[in-house]
Length: 292
Picture 1 (cartoon, helix red, strand yellow):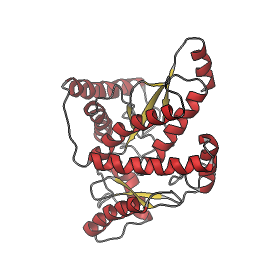
Picture 2: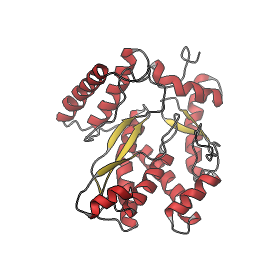
Picture 3: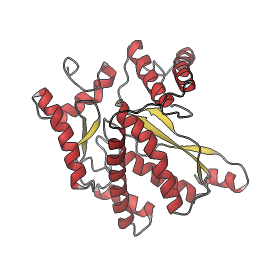
């Protein structure tokens, strides 16, 4: 960050991405967006003048579209709040979440890649971040890289050129819920740091106020868990120490209860594992026969 700031001090404006805390499972993007905001403020303090948020697509279009709309708005708000009004956000980039199992058959791999491209086109984003079709099987080759991006480019450009106005049912609700969660977590972080967002972030990880399931970092508390609801949207199954309002927790519980009623089984840890694999199996939720 400081190196890019050093260039900016000398008139060379370089743009870097914000990816936040990468979700390693089907999990609401609240913590991810909080961490993109922390990243943005930290980068701006080091002199960066151009930032580019990556919004990781989880497969439910309602949530994906809501998060793509919400993330840059909140990042802009907090940059301004901390006095970095000259740091610009150059665009938003829907991303094919890198830590999920990706379909190893070509059809599924192409479909997932094209889904992210479609979301990017419908949200009028100016770029998409993708995995190659053979990335699940090993190091991608140049030929498969090329055909992957040609397929994505076709979807992205053909659909985006049409400037389709799309009103995804429930998107406003998902945006409002996530915004409430982000503000609640960030408010607690700023309290912990006595206004210092970096000091607060350190304490938040130590206390589990910033947390993620199956985190590879030994400092992560790993007291939270996410599953999908009946429509494949990501919900909190276990909240850990996330400082979320009780009405927001009830919202997630109600959505999970709809899936429980549908399946006749209470979601648990094993449900989360099934949902981790669902997209690679061509399903939005980990239902039979994709649970074996």
